[in-house]
Length: 327
Image (cartoon, rainbow, N blue to C red; front, side, top):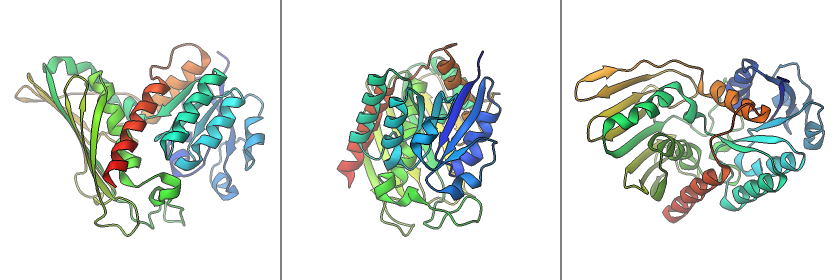
């Protein structure tokens, strides 16, 4: 198979610490170009590929087949539309955009150009969640799914102690705070695990601990088309030393509890209760590695990408409507 040439647009800490290391180990993939408006960002990344501050030059790189978009949310549309017009497949970080209009335009641009657009919901690919999806039918009638996905993100947060532009707490660039950053993972994962998406959603927003003008916590409650209740607690105000990441799936014949699986690594634990606890083993790549392997295979034509961008857009619209009603 001819290797799929990847370009990375947006060389912040997620790309540097997670996406690029995952691409380096993905069979059939190679990084051929980097893009960031800030040359200091690309200077911190050493992958042996040319770096560009100009988007057009980046997209004109020979051998470029797919683009991973990790720029701030409000800048997604520009990069995705340009990449689609250039005929490149796009894997765009969640949320699709800072608002619904941009997200809709991105999905339309990819559809009209006939290129693959995927959303980078890496939690779909965590090996514990892949295993849990296989086990869900054993729990009888599913009644509830609960997720706690929290972290500590002050205004001056930095991933490595060096000066850092924390755009995730800038409403203009992020579209909000903790809710728009973390809740998309839970909404997507609920649909992936249950086989049916949330179709009703309400939100309560919190500004209680951090000193910035966006929400630092949120509770979201929803219901799937089949009547499963879904509860999400997301936050930027929970110290990392505390227990802060938990996933529960409850059914009439049992339940599953995953602890510390919500995140960028393949760690954590998965326990079944029917009613006695049984530890479930799982093994596999990091969520980022599995995600890039699947998207690379789809671009290469050796398999299909299982998630429709139109479905991702519908979840994005549902979330932003709930957040808008809560403000």
